Length: 213
Image (cartoon, rainbow, N blue to C red; front, side, top):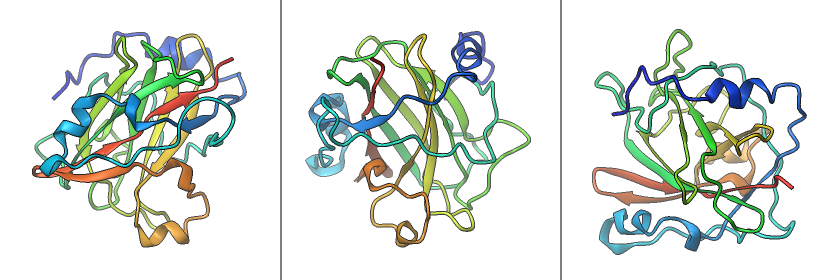
């Protein structure tokens, strides 16, 4: 588990300067070949996650999605949201943050928050909330649990992604095969993660491509 008190990085600098800037960034999913090969190796029985659409050009670009009512600023910097009292099926979400010309973005902010396995958000503290920065290859990895169903919504993660010095992109990630996908008014198929069974939990992959030019 990551250090819950590690909040000394420049997350406030990333987000604070971008609040007055329109959310001009958009995401496209990127070719799964760009994802760290360790993701595929972690999938049970040698399975590989389905590729997402290739980066580059305007095809596949999707708009940001609403932040929702439960965002809490200044979350801890950590790559694992697992805690002893957190209930739910374990899942590892990994991928890269790339530019539209398929170049990795090092030091990009990736900030996740979501409901627990019962569909409940912690609005008093920082359970199932945390941010991290991509490595030199633009990679991120998050250990957490599969979110439960919040009333009126399909299963989803909230995420903010931001290249250094650029506006913040707020969006959501969804799960494949969920019946509620058909009734959730803001569900976007472009933002569905690839999911496979992996060991005692699941492995999910999604590569963000930021349009920063």
